[in-house]
Length: 216
Ligand SMILES: Nc1nc2c(c(=O)[nH]1)N[C@H]1C(S)=C(S)[C@@H](COP(=O)(O)O)O[C@H]1N2
Ligand SMILES: [Mo]
Image 1 (tube, rainbow, N blue to C red):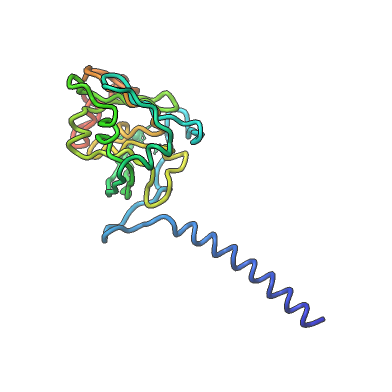
Image 2: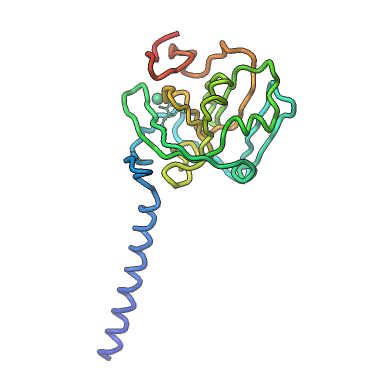
């Protein structure tokens, strides 16, 4: 009987251990240091999106690239993830509200993605649309020259819903409102005066971080 009890106890304890091990390994999945640089955490963001976190269904999801392109595209999530080379870089996001987070982003180059649809030589502006109706734009030249990423992972974990799953623009050196989350559409245009959600409410068109966001 005593032996049986001990056996049961050992069994219960071992179950408990495996469980807490799993929990620990999940937390450890997020990297907090990269090439000697300390990183912030996925949990450091203040969620203040237009309509709260969007739950995008990845099997039904399509990423549309249209406008001034040779061949409009509609990609599935897997086609985006597996169809283009992956890149990673450490970039800090800074919101006009005063918080900032340094993250190791992983994704594909927007220039590769746009290139696959063939940008018309007249195109100079890229308009991003999102699952919550949010929009913003960036110059095509800026995206190409700065190797701007469309991210699907941050700190080695897949973007969670709150952070823009499946894709967020990593708009390096631009204020947070240029970092469109839940991207569903990429439209090439030749209208550099197109103003997105915050830009049409008084935020600067360029969104350069070294300039005030309350600009033109
Ligand atoms: N689709 C969408 N993307 C968005 C927003 C939004 O409301 N909707 N907010 C922007 C703003 S103002 C910031 S600062 C960044 C980061 O916001 P978060 O902390 O809510 O993730 O997302 C940007 N991208
Ligand atoms: Mo923001």
